[in-house]
Length: 249
Length: 342
Image: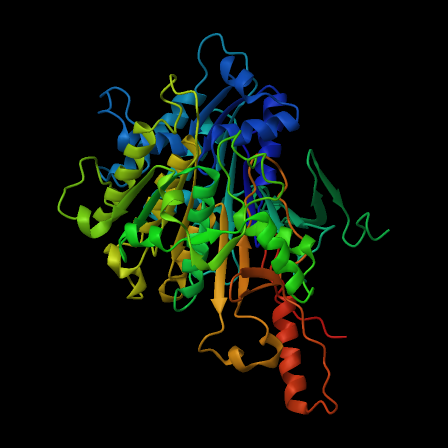
């Protein structure tokens, strides 16, 4: 409850973690607000079906609030004039404001429990945060947005927040690195998927570092770091200790 | 969204661009061609002619069979994969192979070109009109291009908006040399461009348009001119597939005996991972291309046999350098930077 989880990937694609958390929280009966900036609804829906969850059904019963970034952007650019009572969540694109307040309002309204809601705990899921930077939001605006979301979702509503970011060791994208580093410091749990340092391998797709930030919760505690390797299959992901891939044993 | 990094002189990426359009014509897809450099009419006149099955069979026999046809298939598959909304991934059933082959020494016949409907966007003709929709602080050339694409998609019903239309077709969009100075974007000229977000915003909106409709798009970009690497990283993130072409013209590799059979390297930086947890990663990451008299082929890079009697120190050094390059192939999975010494 009230935890901020950061999903991070380097030299590989960590989106499988997003799919996992989406189906995990939906199956657990939580109310989920999914800010999907990079892919379309059908992409997530098809993968979720392989993992045993129906996104369309969840949306129908009000358990899932899905913001399809690509579609919102198109509506903003090519749609008719928006109604004054319903500003687009991606309003910062049109240049009228430089902050992500509209997006935050959207999140807050979606996750505030309505009467008759019986869901366990709200969850905010974001895929992925770097897109906001590509669209012109400043790093400060993005960090502000996350901060407001944390206060609102984690502290006030006692829910969880899960965010995906990309990073690179020798990245020249300073704005992105700034956001990622800042988020790392404030996360309770970091799941870091990395490509293998020795190069591409067919049987081991990468390694995942799980960092439990105990130092945040209690002074004097050390962070707990665990490292596993993984292989992604069509319907699930297998994890194993380093060097013990099924192909080797 | 297939993103191609151009080689230095644009020769080979232009060829790839034309292949994409030619394939569209042969499959009966509609085309949309946009360019700021040359008029789309002249681009369409230069498309390679398709090879008929029997002619190609003869070509294969003539060649020294160093290429396994299985490899050929795989390589072409990597170059031609594109993602649409579901249902339009199947190839026409009349052809057994995936895609078609083309003869670059012959031009496509005008009748074949006329057989499909095509739309063009030539920037210098469109400059006079003002963009009607909100530009969102984007470069006006990009805004006009987006507007034009969106108009075609909705008018011709590629987004399924016209329920009357029974025949659904695919729109192939080709955009040439995006990001170059001709489009009014200065990211290719200076280290600190005025507007770092125009290209990425454009790509995001384009991605939205592609996802919403039955279309596929190839973009070529003079990536070697873009100084600001942060932009390239963001662009890679926003594209489904990123392929870079590195030609050997003018570089020291031209005279390197290891590369004497080839004209350049193909770097596959990213493969689409759509609608599934995994993506289709091939075994090999080292691909090279060559332009023969009639064919443009992409093959696995293999070192020629070392037949010299005395291997001098200098060439051994070269070999080690190239081997290092080979082992550090790029991919969606991992980039190995460390060279393991045995």
